Image (tube, rainbow, N blue to C red; front, side, top):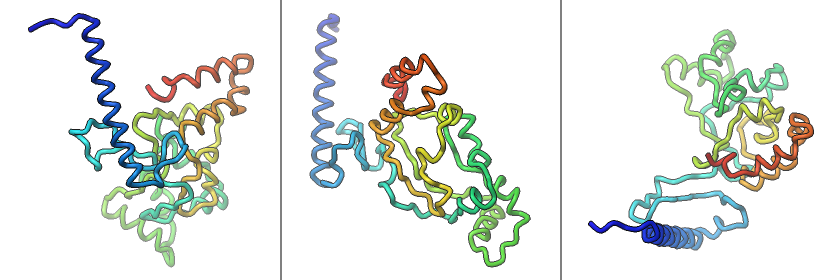
Length: 224
């Protein structure tokens, strides 16, 4: 078998990449034509993104960027954040403890909920009845994800919580919600604007704040 020189190999790889990008652009344009509302000036439009080559194209295997703004997502249990946060004074991190310890914010285990609600009367409280039914059956509550980033985006909750970023800055005024909604666009531009302006960077880095802001513009920060 004839061996390719480095120059020849580079040409082959570049040609292959060009063909692949052309195919992706054709599919993207076709999808935009079928769904005009999906086209916008937004860097990452809300909708379906398929990065697979044509022969593997499968509409069930896609990357999404979450729900449209201001659209409530019906959950298996209508959880009253307001009652827990405003009436009982509970901190977000009590239930979402993973947010201050790792990458994902996560949802509380049913056992954590039952630690309190096992002692609460369910009379005239249909949502608590649902909670206890899931617990008695040993089933995980099928919560639906509201804030969803593409798989090619790395986001660490811990870095933001430790830095002093309030949950509401990304998740909205959750303490006033019963059915959670996505209020922030969560686009690349939105994140970059925050990195460029957020006061916590100045507070945490002092004289090196501008250097840190420059680092946060690096692609590797969010696309590892």
